[in-house]
Length: 130
Image (cartoon, rainbow, N blue to C red; front, side):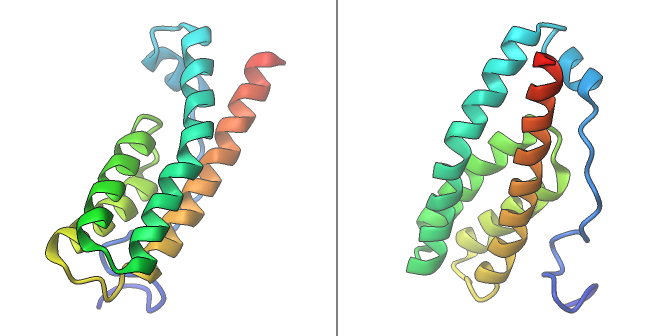
């Protein structure tokens, strides 16, 4: 394992991610209503998706881990959350390979990144409403 001793080598070091509100709005054609709907849907669905990944890890179900991590990777990629995408992709690869040795550790990194993303998206909603 290379890099930081507490982080899987496939997962980049945490860097404070900041969502560019304007760029995100432009990504949705400048339509704030659509952006709000997408963020709200993400905030509802993401905990369920994260729970599915956690369950797959704890159950040692490699096939389900690959599927659930892939789904969550797609969800977080919409918002440009590269560290969350990288952690989900790592879990997807671990599931596909059947080697779950580092899945718990990688899941911890994914969970932290997804939680940070959720907080930032809540701030985007507040800014739009504000």
